[in-house]
Amino acid sequence: MHAKKAKAPVGNRLRIWFQDPSRVILLIFGIVCTISTLLPIIAIIRDTFQIHPGTIDAYLTKKTSGYSVVNYTDLFTSRLARTNLWEPLLNTLFLAVLTCVISILYGGIFAYLVTRTDMKCRKYLSSIFIFPYIMPQWTLAVCWQNVFNSNRVTGTSDGLLASLTGICMPSWWCRGLLPSAIVLGLHYAPFAYILIGGIFRNMDANLEEAAMILNTPRHRITWRITIPMVRPAILSTILLVFGSTMGSYPVPHYLGLSTLSTKYISMNSKYTGEASILALIMMLLGLLILGLNQKSLKSRANYTTVTGKSGQLSRANLHAGKHILAVLFIVLTFFTSIFPIVLFAFETFLPNPGDYSFLYTGNASHLTTKWWITRDSNDSALYGQMGILYNKTIWNAYAGTLKVSAACSLLAGTIGTLIGYAVSRHRRSKWASYVNSIAFLPYLMPSIAVSAAFFVLFSSQRINLFNTYTLLILAGTVKYIPFASRNALNSMLQLSGEIEEAAQIQNVPWIRRMTHIIIPIQKTSILSGYMLPFMTCLRELSLFLLLCTQGFILSTTLDYFDEMGLYAFSSAINLILIVTILVFNFLVNKLTGAGLDSGIGKEGD
Image (cartoon, rainbow, N blue to C red):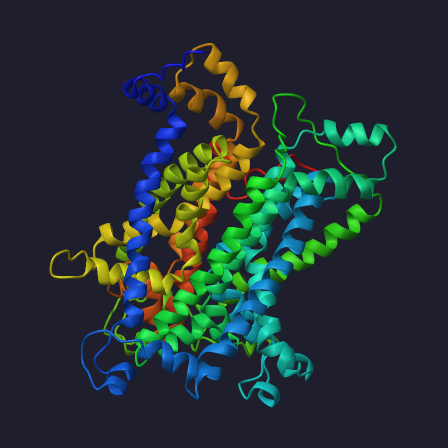
């Protein structure tokens, strides 16, 4: 008989286990993300059963406190179930699917043209393409209204098209599902461009070149080699866009589409518990998509595309098409990127913001600078406000916004990068799959629901962090970790394990491997993981709306001026945010060679 092999002592096994930094990272952040994610979810679930004084559940149960299932029975079975649940649910699903299709097709095709063809003006188009995501989500929706609305169709004042040409677009083009999907698709197309374009840019061209040597048709190379390599980025884009669209409030609100998010806002005051059920449904839908993505992550082949070998790009020759496509995208990006900014700028020089009559009369003599340079807060023309340049409320909020955004970017970017690295090294393990899922879960939760959950958790008698930067940074970090984690995971899945293993054989410490090998190789993708939280946090409103007072940061200050009807001030704040992001992206690009678009298409024409 053979003697049983003696097991190593538990202490030795633990010491060996903890010598792997990626396992330690998974353990630490698995626990941290579980606590920071599950507590808000538990708060929402609890809220669905709780009786809220002054709401419909209190009226139906004749109680002012306690717990009941009346919120569920009323939402699913009452005569308002179709209006409050089923129609918004279907609209949300259709909107999410259409938005995913539009953003991936538009952003993915553009990423391919910029990185893998000889299309002209690639450097300019790469920079301008990201503008729709830089701008607040409601920007394109407001522009859509200003251009296509007409009194005859929508019952509102005539937009630019109707005023200039007399053409009235049909109602389905002005309001509802299609315009909402188009606007959100254009808004999230930079997501697809950043994620897919980063993969295209870092791909080793040897595989495609080998297929071309064997006389493989170009379309077959695309479907059998190129697309499978960018599949991780496509799946991540679907997950990000689907989750974002489900929680999108401004665009459906402005364009008149009833979705779960808009219904959540409208029901939250009188139907608080039922509104929380809607939030729970959105999370369950997100979990379903997340589960499908995780199944794909485990089963797909390991397409290693960064190996330390040839990294030259293989560009397809478009012949005359390189000029035609360049002109087409220059026109498209003008109307989606530059035109909205021009309209915002004009808003700040109009005596009555929203009056664009000078565009078709040619009379610009009535433009004014009063919204910018007025020093007297007693001036009745500015309704008790000082001009934008001298308005302390705006600039104090600007400083607070920078503080919160920088902190959220550093924390979320660092944590997300470490999670992405660790998950990629152990992606077939159940614990890595769990950490990846739990870290991404907050992104699938509507921002308003996250805001309400953090408000409940941290505005009690025991812990009161309301109206503090600590609470905003905590909520923002938890919400934005998915940006960095998914971005890092995509890039790390490309990185061959042989590169790090070679350094391990030479006894190179983990910190040195990260700072001298892994991070430099994937520098552009990793820096995008810091840029996305920073940019998103700058213009975030829904997440911070319940956590601080108006005037604390710029987004809540913008909301305050909108409520007051001072649209020149809100337009100016939009401009300040956009310029800040552009300047930051420019500086990072010059100093490190990476920016929001990860250096995609920067090789020149």
